[in-house]
Image 1 (cartoon, rainbow, N blue to C red):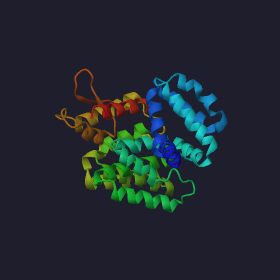
Image 2 (cartoon, one colour; image 1 turned 60 degrees about the horizontal axis):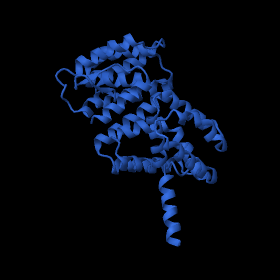
Image 3 (cartoon, rainbow, N blue to C red; image 1 turned 135 degrees about the horizontal axis):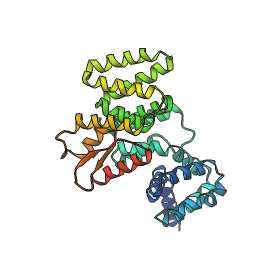
Image 4 (cartoon, one colour; image 1 turned 120 degrees about the vertical axis):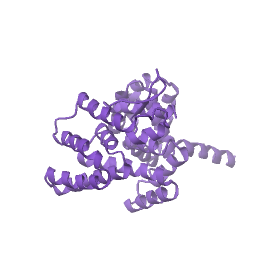
Length: 305
């Protein structure tokens, strides 16, 4: 009898880990044909009392292609109602869902690494201090990740900071990364933009600093990057025609003669914006337009790897 209770507890624990919770959200997102439905689902979940959650989000599950997910969600919410620690874990994963998706891509969908990252970040420990989380993250990056994976993760973190502090969206970041064509240099530029934003320096001063960084390491990238940064800084927004212009340039710079390149190598250069052409079976590049389109592109990259 004792063994049966222990086994039952073990099964429950396995279905309520941060990784299991994230896996549910990922599966639910993939089961919806409209990305906006998932965004609305997350928004509803974060503002609704736990006892009313299932009823309020039920319409979203009716649009899901996987009917089993509703049962999984009902069980998870029932457990969260009875366990405040689980409720906290659930909401923390929910709040970080977009960031976690990017981390999973950076980790190449490696289950062991993704589970290790979630444990390092202590999503199931609301009382963990900032220093504890930081130490756990550094240990994970240095001991579990190879240098290439670590660099991809550093890029994700740098982009998240740039998004939070500068309001740069995924399309802008992906285009900037592709124009620079070098992860280390790209991260240095993002850090410079953030540093100067905090100091409230004039834009021309910021540009001069970035120009010095670029011209020391990759001078050919500067003219087009300068034009793009000015377009972003103008505050008028970048339309599809402008994106097409930049991505045609990126295509000409990085993809001549690379049709047979490994898809992940291409993804690195384009900031996860690669596509596999269904008609020709070759890798092609398209300009980013929306986050929904970007996620679909990312999934195609994973699917064809």
